[in-house]
Image 1 (cartoon, rainbow over the protein chains, first blue to last red):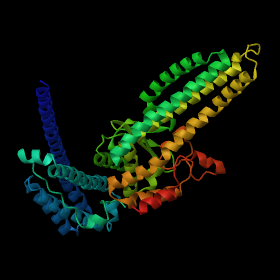
Image 2: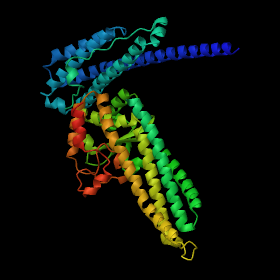
Image 3: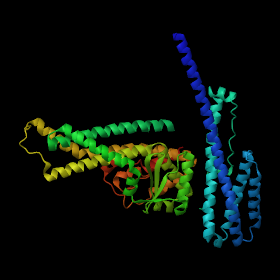
Image 4: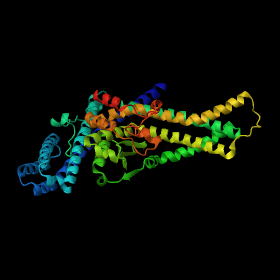
Length: 187
Length: 299
Protein backbone atom coordinates (compact mmCIF):
# COMPACT_ATOMS: atom_id res chain seq x y z
CA UNK A 1 0.00 0.00 0.00
CA UNK A 2 2.63 2.48 1.12
CA UNK A 3 4.90 1.34 -1.70
CA UNK A 4 2.19 2.14 -4.27
CA UNK A 5 1.64 5.59 -2.84
CA UNK A 6 5.37 6.27 -2.89
CA UNK A 7 5.50 5.07 -6.50
CA UNK A 8 2.63 7.30 -7.52
CA UNK A 9 4.20 10.29 -5.79
CA UNK A 10 7.52 9.67 -7.52
CA UNK A 11 5.85 9.36 -10.92
CA UNK A 12 3.92 12.60 -10.37
CA UNK A 13 7.10 14.36 -9.30
CA UNK A 14 8.93 13.11 -12.38
CA UNK A 15 6.16 14.33 -14.67
CA UNK A 16 6.17 17.71 -12.96
CA UNK A 17 9.94 17.95 -13.35
CA UNK A 18 9.72 17.01 -17.02
CA UNK A 19 6.99 19.56 -17.67
CA UNK A 20 8.88 22.24 -15.78
CA UNK A 21 12.09 21.68 -17.72
CA UNK A 22 10.23 21.55 -21.03
CA UNK A 23 8.35 24.76 -20.33
CA UNK A 24 11.55 26.44 -19.25
CA UNK A 25 13.14 25.60 -22.58
CA UNK A 26 10.12 26.78 -24.53
CA UNK A 27 10.13 30.05 -22.66
CA UNK A 28 13.81 30.66 -23.33
CA UNK A 29 13.37 29.88 -27.01
CA UNK A 30 10.43 32.28 -27.20
CA UNK A 31 12.54 35.00 -25.56
CA UNK A 32 15.31 34.50 -28.07
CA UNK A 33 12.89 34.62 -30.99
CA UNK A 34 11.20 37.71 -29.61
CA UNK A 35 14.48 39.49 -29.26
CA UNK A 36 15.34 38.65 -32.85
CA UNK A 37 12.11 40.26 -33.98
CA UNK A 38 13.11 43.34 -31.95
CA UNK A 39 16.22 43.62 -34.11
CA UNK A 40 14.20 43.06 -37.24
CA UNK A 41 11.78 45.84 -36.36
CA UNK A 42 14.68 48.25 -35.92
CA UNK A 43 16.32 47.20 -39.19
CA UNK A 44 13.04 47.86 -40.93
CA UNK A 45 12.69 51.21 -39.21
CA UNK A 46 16.11 52.27 -40.38
CA UNK A 47 15.30 51.17 -43.91
CA UNK A 48 12.20 53.33 -43.76
CA UNK A 49 14.23 56.34 -42.67
CA UNK A 50 16.89 56.06 -45.35
CA UNK A 51 14.95 57.38 -48.41
CA UNK A 52 14.11 60.47 -46.40
CA UNK A 53 17.72 60.90 -45.38
CA UNK A 54 18.97 60.46 -48.92
CA UNK A 55 16.62 63.08 -50.30
CA UNK A 56 17.48 65.53 -47.52
CA UNK A 57 21.21 65.15 -47.97
CA UNK A 58 20.95 65.32 -51.77
CA UNK A 59 19.44 68.76 -51.62
CA UNK A 60 22.42 70.16 -49.73
CA UNK A 61 25.45 68.28 -50.95
CA UNK A 62 25.75 67.46 -54.58
CA UNK A 63 29.16 65.89 -54.32
CA UNK A 64 28.38 62.89 -52.13
CA UNK A 65 26.54 60.94 -54.79
CA UNK A 66 28.68 57.81 -54.43
CA UNK A 67 28.15 57.52 -50.65
CA UNK A 68 24.43 58.04 -51.07
CA UNK A 69 24.34 55.43 -53.79
CA UNK A 70 26.11 52.96 -51.54
CA UNK A 71 23.59 53.61 -48.75
CA UNK A 72 20.69 53.04 -51.11
CA UNK A 73 22.25 49.92 -52.52
CA UNK A 74 22.94 48.39 -49.08
CA UNK A 75 19.41 49.24 -48.05
CA UNK A 76 17.85 47.29 -50.91
CA UNK A 77 20.33 44.47 -50.39
CA UNK A 78 19.17 44.24 -46.78
CA UNK A 79 15.54 44.05 -47.87
CA UNK A 80 16.22 41.07 -50.06
CA UNK A 81 17.95 38.86 -47.53
CA UNK A 82 15.58 36.17 -46.25
CA UNK A 83 14.75 36.42 -42.55
CA UNK A 84 16.33 33.06 -41.83
CA UNK A 85 19.82 34.20 -42.75
CA UNK A 86 20.46 36.19 -39.64
CA UNK A 87 24.25 36.30 -39.85
CA UNK A 88 24.13 37.66 -43.40
CA UNK A 89 21.50 40.18 -42.47
CA UNK A 90 23.57 41.50 -39.59
CA UNK A 91 26.71 41.63 -41.73
CA UNK A 92 24.99 43.85 -44.29
CA UNK A 93 23.43 45.87 -41.50
CA UNK A 94 26.86 46.49 -39.98
CA UNK A 95 28.16 47.63 -43.32
CA UNK A 96 25.22 49.99 -43.65
CA UNK A 97 25.95 51.38 -40.17
CA UNK A 98 29.52 52.07 -41.24
CA UNK A 99 28.47 53.77 -44.46
CA UNK A 100 25.93 55.92 -42.65
CA UNK A 101 28.59 56.93 -40.18
CA UNK A 102 30.90 58.06 -42.96
CA UNK A 103 28.00 59.93 -44.54
CA UNK A 104 27.41 61.78 -41.29
CA UNK A 105 31.10 62.52 -41.01
CA UNK A 106 31.03 64.05 -44.48
CA UNK A 107 27.94 66.05 -43.58
CA UNK A 108 30.11 67.99 -41.14
CA UNK A 109 31.44 69.85 -44.18
CA UNK A 110 28.00 71.21 -45.06
CA UNK A 111 26.95 73.74 -42.41
CA UNK A 112 23.62 74.41 -44.14
CA UNK A 113 22.76 70.74 -44.02
CA UNK A 114 23.79 70.43 -40.38
CA UNK A 115 21.68 73.41 -39.45
CA UNK A 116 18.50 72.14 -41.07
CA UNK A 117 15.93 70.96 -38.53
CA UNK A 118 14.86 68.16 -40.78
CA UNK A 119 18.39 66.78 -40.84
CA UNK A 120 18.72 67.15 -37.08
CA UNK A 121 15.56 65.20 -36.37
CA UNK A 122 16.63 62.56 -38.89
CA UNK A 123 19.95 62.30 -37.06
CA UNK A 124 18.21 61.71 -33.75
CA UNK A 125 15.92 59.13 -35.32
CA UNK A 126 18.81 57.34 -36.94
CA UNK A 127 21.07 57.35 -33.89
CA UNK A 128 18.12 56.10 -31.90
CA UNK A 129 17.61 53.27 -34.37
CA UNK A 130 21.30 52.43 -34.51
CA UNK A 131 21.44 52.26 -30.73
CA UNK A 132 18.34 50.13 -30.61
CA UNK A 133 19.89 47.74 -33.11
CA UNK A 134 23.01 47.51 -30.94
CA UNK A 135 21.02 47.02 -27.73
CA UNK A 136 18.60 44.53 -29.19
CA UNK A 137 21.56 42.56 -30.53
CA UNK A 138 23.00 42.58 -27.02
CA UNK A 139 19.67 41.38 -25.68
CA UNK A 140 19.44 38.72 -28.38
CA UNK A 141 22.89 37.41 -27.53
CA UNK A 142 22.13 37.18 -23.85
CA UNK A 143 18.83 35.37 -24.42
CA UNK A 144 20.59 33.00 -26.81
CA UNK A 145 23.29 32.43 -24.20
CA UNK A 146 20.61 31.48 -21.66
CA UNK A 147 18.98 29.09 -24.09
CA UNK A 148 22.26 27.48 -25.12
CA UNK A 149 23.34 27.02 -21.52
CA UNK A 150 20.04 25.33 -20.73
CA UNK A 151 20.27 23.04 -23.74
CA UNK A 152 23.75 21.92 -22.74
CA UNK A 153 23.30 21.45 -19.03
CA UNK A 154 21.89 18.46 -17.21
CA UNK A 155 19.06 17.51 -16.87
CA UNK A 156 17.43 19.82 -19.40
CA UNK A 157 19.80 18.56 -22.11
CA UNK A 158 17.81 15.28 -22.13
CA UNK A 159 14.53 17.08 -22.72
CA UNK A 160 16.18 19.29 -25.33
CA UNK A 161 17.34 16.20 -27.19
CA UNK A 162 13.94 14.52 -27.12
CA UNK A 163 12.12 17.60 -28.37
CA UNK A 164 14.82 18.77 -30.80
CA UNK A 165 15.65 22.09 -29.24
CA UNK A 166 18.54 23.50 -31.22
CA UNK A 167 21.25 25.82 -30.01
CA UNK A 168 21.14 29.24 -31.60
CA UNK A 169 24.10 31.26 -32.86
CA UNK A 170 25.34 34.50 -31.41
CA UNK A 171 25.29 37.57 -33.58
CA UNK A 172 28.75 38.91 -34.25
CA UNK A 173 29.48 42.34 -32.90
CA UNK A 174 31.23 44.48 -35.54
CA UNK A 175 34.91 44.92 -34.73
CA UNK A 176 35.04 48.69 -34.47
CA UNK A 177 32.18 48.86 -32.01
CA UNK A 178 33.73 46.32 -29.67
CA UNK A 179 35.94 48.91 -28.05
CA UNK A 180 33.98 52.09 -28.70
CA UNK A 181 30.59 50.68 -27.66
CA UNK A 182 27.58 52.40 -29.17
CA UNK A 183 27.09 54.62 -32.18
CA UNK A 184 26.55 58.27 -31.60
CA UNK A 185 26.12 60.67 -34.47
CA UNK A 186 25.28 63.68 -32.45
CA UNK A 187 28.49 64.67 -30.77
CA UNK B 1 24.22 38.19 -8.31
CA UNK B 2 21.22 40.18 -9.55
CA UNK B 3 18.76 37.67 -8.14
CA UNK B 4 20.62 37.59 -4.85
CA UNK B 5 20.37 41.32 -4.69
CA UNK B 6 16.67 41.31 -5.46
CA UNK B 7 16.11 38.70 -2.78
CA UNK B 8 18.19 40.64 -0.28
CA UNK B 9 16.24 43.79 -1.12
CA UNK B 10 12.97 42.01 -0.47
CA UNK B 11 14.33 40.77 2.86
CA UNK B 12 15.50 44.25 3.73
CA UNK B 13 12.13 45.70 2.85
CA UNK B 14 10.55 43.45 5.44
CA UNK B 15 13.27 44.29 7.96
CA UNK B 16 12.86 48.00 7.37
CA UNK B 17 9.11 47.70 7.65
CA UNK B 18 9.36 45.85 10.96
CA UNK B 19 11.90 48.32 12.32
CA UNK B 20 9.78 51.28 11.39
CA UNK B 21 6.64 49.75 12.84
CA UNK B 22 8.42 49.20 16.14
CA UNK B 23 9.48 52.83 16.02
CA UNK B 24 5.92 53.90 15.26
CA UNK B 25 4.64 51.79 18.16
CA UNK B 26 7.20 53.36 20.50
CA UNK B 27 6.29 56.88 19.43
CA UNK B 28 2.63 56.06 19.77
CA UNK B 29 3.26 54.73 23.23
CA UNK B 30 5.25 57.82 24.16
CA UNK B 31 2.62 60.20 22.86
CA UNK B 32 -0.19 58.25 24.42
CA UNK B 33 1.63 58.10 27.74
CA UNK B 34 2.45 61.79 27.78
CA UNK B 35 -0.88 63.13 26.71
CA UNK B 36 -3.49 60.63 27.68
CA UNK B 37 -1.85 58.48 30.29
CA UNK B 38 -2.36 55.35 28.19
CA UNK B 39 0.49 53.84 26.19
CA UNK B 40 -1.64 51.13 24.57
CA UNK B 41 -4.22 53.59 23.27
CA UNK B 42 -1.41 55.65 21.78
CA UNK B 43 0.01 52.61 20.00
CA UNK B 44 -3.35 51.74 18.49
CA UNK B 45 -4.10 55.26 17.30
CA UNK B 46 -0.59 55.75 15.90
CA UNK B 47 -0.82 52.37 14.17
CA UNK B 48 -4.11 53.21 12.50
CA UNK B 49 -2.96 56.68 11.46
CA UNK B 50 0.29 55.40 10.00
CA UNK B 51 -1.45 52.54 8.19
CA UNK B 52 -3.84 54.98 6.49
CA UNK B 53 -1.05 57.45 5.73
CA UNK B 54 1.19 54.72 4.34
CA UNK B 55 -1.37 53.18 2.05
CA UNK B 56 -2.18 56.58 0.57
CA UNK B 57 1.50 57.44 0.24
CA UNK B 58 2.49 54.17 -1.39
CA UNK B 59 -0.39 54.03 -3.82
CA UNK B 60 0.38 57.62 -4.84
CA UNK B 61 4.13 57.45 -4.34
CA UNK B 62 5.17 58.39 -7.87
CA UNK B 63 2.86 61.42 -7.88
CA UNK B 64 3.96 62.44 -4.39
CA UNK B 65 7.67 62.12 -5.13
CA UNK B 66 7.42 63.84 -8.51
CA UNK B 67 5.38 66.69 -7.00
CA UNK B 68 7.87 67.10 -4.19
CA UNK B 69 10.59 67.55 -6.78
CA UNK B 70 8.57 69.77 -9.14
CA UNK B 71 8.85 67.28 -11.98
CA UNK B 72 6.61 67.38 -15.02
CA UNK B 73 5.79 64.27 -16.99
CA UNK B 74 6.52 63.96 -20.69
CA UNK B 75 4.34 61.67 -22.74
CA UNK B 76 6.07 61.30 -26.07
CA UNK B 77 9.48 61.11 -27.67
CA UNK B 78 8.98 64.50 -29.36
CA UNK B 79 9.20 66.38 -26.09
CA UNK B 80 12.73 65.20 -25.28
CA UNK B 81 13.84 62.80 -28.01
CA UNK B 82 17.25 61.88 -26.68
CA UNK B 83 16.13 61.25 -23.09
CA UNK B 84 13.08 59.30 -24.21
CA UNK B 85 15.05 57.13 -26.61
CA UNK B 86 17.82 56.43 -24.13
CA UNK B 87 15.29 55.41 -21.47
CA UNK B 88 13.62 53.15 -24.04
CA UNK B 89 16.96 51.50 -24.84
CA UNK B 90 17.84 50.94 -21.19
CA UNK B 91 14.40 49.55 -20.39
CA UNK B 92 14.79 47.19 -23.32
CA UNK B 93 18.13 45.72 -22.26
CA UNK B 94 17.11 45.63 -18.60
CA UNK B 95 14.00 43.76 -19.76
CA UNK B 96 11.64 45.93 -17.76
CA UNK B 97 8.62 47.84 -19.12
CA UNK B 98 9.13 51.43 -20.23
CA UNK B 99 8.92 53.67 -17.15
CA UNK B 100 7.12 57.01 -17.04
CA UNK B 101 9.51 59.85 -17.85
CA UNK B 102 9.68 63.16 -16.00
CA UNK B 103 11.74 66.32 -16.37
CA UNK B 104 12.74 68.70 -13.57
CA UNK B 105 13.55 72.30 -14.45
CA UNK B 106 16.84 72.76 -12.67
CA UNK B 107 20.23 73.70 -14.13
CA UNK B 108 21.99 71.29 -11.76
CA UNK B 109 22.53 67.90 -13.46
CA UNK B 110 20.84 65.03 -11.64
CA UNK B 111 18.41 62.15 -12.09
CA UNK B 112 16.46 59.60 -10.07
CA UNK B 113 14.11 56.65 -10.35
CA UNK B 114 11.10 55.84 -8.21
CA UNK B 115 8.04 53.60 -8.14
CA UNK B 116 6.74 50.49 -6.44
CA UNK B 117 8.05 47.81 -8.78
CA UNK B 118 9.48 47.48 -12.29
CA UNK B 119 5.96 47.45 -13.75
CA UNK B 120 5.12 50.80 -12.14
CA UNK B 121 8.26 52.85 -12.26
CA UNK B 122 9.27 56.34 -13.24
CA UNK B 123 12.51 58.13 -13.98
CA UNK B 124 13.25 61.83 -13.78
CA UNK B 125 16.10 63.91 -15.17
CA UNK B 126 16.88 67.58 -14.65
CA UNK B 127 17.16 69.94 -17.61
CA UNK B 128 20.76 70.52 -16.50
CA UNK B 129 21.53 66.85 -16.98
CA UNK B 130 20.09 66.84 -20.49
CA UNK B 131 22.14 69.90 -21.33
CA UNK B 132 25.60 68.80 -20.29
CA UNK B 133 25.55 65.06 -20.97
CA UNK B 134 26.16 63.52 -24.37
CA UNK B 135 24.30 60.41 -25.38
CA UNK B 136 26.84 57.95 -23.98
CA UNK B 137 26.88 59.69 -20.60
CA UNK B 138 23.10 59.90 -20.54
CA UNK B 139 22.99 56.17 -21.20
CA UNK B 140 25.29 55.61 -18.23
CA UNK B 141 23.04 57.69 -15.97
CA UNK B 142 19.81 56.13 -17.18
CA UNK B 143 21.38 52.66 -16.98
CA UNK B 144 22.09 53.42 -13.33
CA UNK B 145 18.47 54.44 -12.77
CA UNK B 146 17.16 51.41 -14.62
CA UNK B 147 19.28 49.16 -12.38
CA UNK B 148 17.57 50.71 -9.37
CA UNK B 149 14.28 49.82 -11.01
CA UNK B 150 15.30 46.28 -11.88
CA UNK B 151 16.82 45.60 -8.44
CA UNK B 152 13.66 46.67 -6.60
CA UNK B 153 15.69 49.44 -4.95
CA UNK B 154 12.87 51.78 -5.86
CA UNK B 155 10.36 49.84 -3.77
CA UNK B 156 12.64 49.78 -0.75
CA UNK B 157 13.23 53.50 -1.13
CA UNK B 158 9.55 54.27 -1.58
CA UNK B 159 8.60 52.40 1.57
CA UNK B 160 11.44 53.92 3.58
CA UNK B 161 10.47 57.37 2.34
CA UNK B 162 6.79 56.86 3.13
CA UNK B 163 7.58 55.56 6.61
CA UNK B 164 10.04 58.34 7.39
CA UNK B 165 7.49 60.94 6.41
CA UNK B 166 4.76 59.11 8.36
CA UNK B 167 6.92 59.34 11.47
CA UNK B 168 7.60 63.00 10.86
CA UNK B 169 3.87 63.62 10.44
CA UNK B 170 3.16 61.75 13.67
CA UNK B 171 5.71 63.77 15.60
CA UNK B 172 4.42 67.04 14.16
CA UNK B 173 0.96 66.02 15.21
CA UNK B 174 2.23 65.35 18.72
CA UNK B 175 3.96 68.75 18.74
CA UNK B 176 0.75 70.57 17.84
CA UNK B 177 -1.16 68.62 20.39
CA UNK B 178 1.37 69.69 23.00
CA UNK B 179 0.99 73.39 22.26
CA UNK B 180 -2.77 73.30 22.15
CA UNK B 181 -3.02 72.28 25.74
CA UNK B 182 -2.99 68.54 25.57
CA UNK B 183 -0.35 68.54 28.29
CA UNK B 184 -0.95 66.24 31.17
CA UNK B 185 -1.98 67.93 34.40
CA UNK B 186 0.63 67.50 37.10
CA UNK B 187 -1.74 66.17 39.71
CA UNK B 188 -1.68 62.72 38.11
CA UNK B 189 -0.57 59.95 40.35
CA UNK B 190 2.84 58.79 39.09
CA UNK B 191 5.11 61.42 40.58
CA UNK B 192 7.90 59.02 41.51
CA UNK B 193 11.33 58.89 39.90
CA UNK B 194 10.09 56.22 37.48
CA UNK B 195 7.38 58.55 36.26
CA UNK B 196 9.84 61.36 35.62
CA UNK B 197 12.14 59.02 33.69
CA UNK B 198 9.23 57.77 31.63
CA UNK B 199 8.24 61.31 30.73
CA UNK B 200 11.79 62.36 29.83
CA UNK B 201 12.27 59.14 27.87
CA UNK B 202 9.06 59.72 25.95
CA UNK B 203 10.01 63.27 25.04
CA UNK B 204 13.47 62.18 23.94
CA UNK B 205 11.97 59.44 21.81
CA UNK B 206 9.64 61.85 20.08
CA UNK B 207 12.51 64.20 19.37
CA UNK B 208 14.94 61.53 18.20
CA UNK B 209 12.64 59.26 16.19
CA UNK B 210 12.58 61.30 12.98
CA UNK B 211 16.36 61.50 13.17
CA UNK B 212 16.66 57.74 13.51
CA UNK B 213 14.27 57.27 10.62
CA UNK B 214 16.26 59.51 8.32
CA UNK B 215 19.62 58.02 9.29
CA UNK B 216 18.27 54.54 8.53
CA UNK B 217 16.91 55.75 5.22
CA UNK B 218 20.26 57.19 4.25
CA UNK B 219 22.35 54.22 5.30
CA UNK B 220 20.09 52.06 3.17
CA UNK B 221 20.83 54.03 0.06
CA UNK B 222 24.63 54.26 0.24
CA UNK B 223 25.57 50.74 -0.82
CA UNK B 224 22.95 50.53 -3.49
CA UNK B 225 24.68 53.25 -5.46
CA UNK B 226 27.75 51.09 -6.11
CA UNK B 227 25.52 48.22 -7.18
CA UNK B 228 23.50 50.40 -9.50
CA UNK B 229 26.71 51.74 -11.05
CA UNK B 230 27.83 48.17 -11.74
CA UNK B 231 24.37 47.36 -13.08
CA UNK B 232 24.54 50.32 -15.42
CA UNK B 233 27.78 49.06 -16.94
CA UNK B 234 26.23 45.63 -17.32
CA UNK B 235 23.43 47.21 -19.37
CA UNK B 236 25.45 49.61 -21.50
CA UNK B 237 28.64 47.49 -21.71
CA UNK B 238 30.41 50.81 -21.60
CA UNK B 239 31.97 52.00 -18.33
CA UNK B 240 33.37 55.16 -19.98
CA UNK B 241 29.96 56.74 -20.42
CA UNK B 242 29.10 56.49 -16.73
CA UNK B 243 32.61 57.45 -15.61
CA UNK B 244 32.59 60.65 -17.61
CA UNK B 245 29.03 61.35 -16.47
CA UNK B 246 30.07 61.02 -12.82
CA UNK B 247 33.08 63.23 -13.49
CA UNK B 248 30.75 65.91 -14.79
CA UNK B 249 28.54 65.49 -11.73
CA UNK B 250 31.54 66.19 -9.49
CA UNK B 251 31.59 69.80 -10.62
CA UNK B 252 27.85 70.24 -10.35
CA UNK B 253 26.20 73.09 -8.52
CA UNK B 254 23.79 72.04 -5.78
CA UNK B 255 20.15 71.79 -6.86
CA UNK B 256 18.20 74.93 -6.09
CA UNK B 257 15.07 73.36 -4.74
CA UNK B 258 15.15 69.77 -3.56
CA UNK B 259 12.95 68.02 -1.03
CA UNK B 260 15.41 66.74 1.61
CA UNK B 261 13.51 63.51 2.11
CA UNK B 262 13.95 62.54 -1.51
CA UNK B 263 17.63 63.42 -1.84
CA UNK B 264 18.62 59.78 -1.31
CA UNK B 265 16.84 58.90 -4.55
CA UNK B 266 19.12 60.92 -6.82
CA UNK B 267 22.12 59.50 -8.70
CA UNK B 268 24.32 62.13 -7.10
CA UNK B 269 23.72 64.00 -3.85
CA UNK B 270 21.65 67.08 -4.81
CA UNK B 271 23.34 68.96 -1.95
CA UNK B 272 26.78 68.16 -3.31
CA UNK B 273 29.29 71.02 -3.09
CA UNK B 274 27.11 72.91 -0.65
CA UNK B 275 29.17 73.70 2.43
CA UNK B 276 28.58 71.31 5.25
CA UNK B 277 29.64 70.93 8.84
CA UNK B 278 31.78 67.86 9.53
CA UNK B 279 28.97 65.93 11.22
CA UNK B 280 26.82 66.28 8.13
CA UNK B 281 28.62 63.23 6.71
CA UNK B 282 26.54 61.12 9.06
CA UNK B 283 23.64 62.00 6.83
CA UNK B 284 25.43 61.33 3.55
CA UNK B 285 23.03 59.58 1.22
CA UNK B 286 25.71 58.78 -1.34
CA UNK B 287 29.24 57.40 -1.33
CA UNK B 288 31.79 59.95 -2.57
CA UNK B 289 31.82 60.26 -6.36
CA UNK B 290 35.60 59.70 -6.44
CA UNK B 291 35.09 56.25 -4.91
CA UNK B 292 32.39 55.39 -7.40
CA UNK B 293 34.56 56.47 -10.31
CA UNK B 294 37.50 54.48 -8.95
CA UNK B 295 35.41 51.34 -8.67
CA UNK B 296 34.17 51.76 -12.22
CA UNK B 297 37.69 52.23 -13.52
CA UNK B 298 38.72 48.98 -11.90
CA UNK B 299 35.93 47.02 -13.54
